[in-house]
Image (cartoon, rainbow, N blue to C red; front, side, top):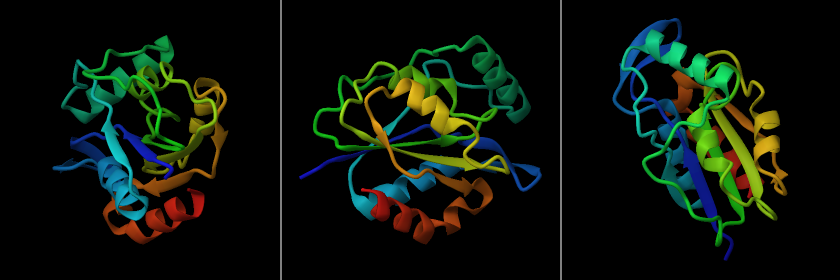
Length: 171
């Protein structure tokens, strides 16, 4: 039976939501990734940088911008050794400066995507999918790519039906 892997990075704590800074107990992308898992099954893998991003939202955005400009690859607490056993890889994250956080790329660039299907899901507050598909295509060599899904972060908790329908239609 084909396997699904749901890779995600999600920010808890201070987040920008509908024009205000709010404190989230669970990040919007984690909520969305769990909806994917509930809809189609599979394993969740949380991307966790060794060095946490700043708790302050504004400071975090500056760290994220500096990482993007430097094309940084922050060290992670754990990595996957391979994608064996998985046919479909959902890559889920927030839109930071138009693409996924660099920590997501720290994981992806180490893996062999030959023969895998990659599906991007991005939570955002207005930027949609940004350039995430272009980024993924450069990192996930040999993969095929399905339709991406942009989820407005402020509406993530209310988006289970939309996320489930997208996930089911693409596996």
